Image (cartoon, rainbow, N blue to C red):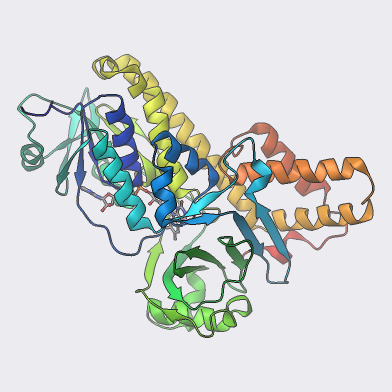
Length: 433
Ligand SMILES: Cc1cc2nc3c(=O)[nH]c(=O)nc-3n(C[C@H](O)[C@H](O)[C@H](O)COP(=O)(O)OP(=O)(O)OC[C@H]3O[C@@H](n4cnc5c(N)ncnc54)[C@H](O)[C@@H]3O)c2cc1C
């Protein structure tokens, strides 16, 4: 018997596309995914936040995730001056899972794909080809005749198209949809290492360090350490000509990396990422929707990427597909549901952008120092201990993908950064240059 014709066609089998495919298939809606099968051995997106664990649980895959991922209890932030800010996800216990995972990406992507297939999603091994067209006088996209044939779509059958092609931004490019760009002009280099000392406790804790130029991540994975540096393009001049030279030189020069990496051995190529802070000006139109990086990407700082890809899928599932396939035949209802989806994604994006900025401009480190000083001075005062616990919870819950969009949490953080900073050095002392 032939499989039912897909109501939804997804372009791209990364985390966003596979998660949405799994969620739609779970509802019994026929869905087909174009998978170009490009899964390099090395991919960024390894450090996950606690809110992602909720999606793993929803898809019933956490037990399998555990088998190849490193348990992640939190994140430590180091500044050039030697200060340290230690986040433990335990402070969000009861509100979110109090931990997350560091994930080797190819394995995670494969698992999400396998799960989508188990739930009934169909995959075709092919790169989707798309063409620009008009629908109801508005720009839109359709699959080429060749791709329709690969997908087995008969004449007249017109499924909803989802762009989850990542930073290729396939639909936006075809329709000339502009993107709002963030203000940073960084380039990121990263690779995996063996014997790179990682003695931060508890085990699995990631390290983010402000460097003399830019910042770096160190993410422990089973058997190796992922080391990445993010640096303004202006600083590249005297670092060498190739990505390998540049990453190697930064590790040798930076005091926070030099000793730890002295005997390290690079075991992968060095990957380069650039121009990634983008948000498409539209998220949907007649017959099409953007999802994951194809809609927008915030910044590697605080690791919101995978969460945004998975949360985008969850939002689409909640606002559109939970209503069944009938909504796909009702243009007004569909448009209304997609407006809610897009508005939510844009709100998430803006909330992450503003939270990330506190780490780039150094204000979060300054408020932390102010808080430490207050706790030392008034150690015996009950309200000071309560304030400390509340501040830890609010900030950790924002960085974990729980309270990131909460007006109260945002206001509270602003308050701390304005009023908790008496007699501490200016924020620029801790900023990423
Ligand atoms: C420097 C840097 C560091 C990062 N670090 C982190 C981190 O620590 N934690 C985190 O959560 N996130 C991180 N991210 C972000 C994260 O990698 C992305 O947000 C995430 O991969 C987005 O998933 P996606 O499914 O939208 O896109 P992708 O993962 O890019 O998947 C898109 C897929 O679509 C395929 N495709 C493209 N065109 C077609 C086509 N025409 N037909 C068929 N298939 C197609 C591609 O080959 C790819 O497999 C980082 C990003 C950068 C730039």
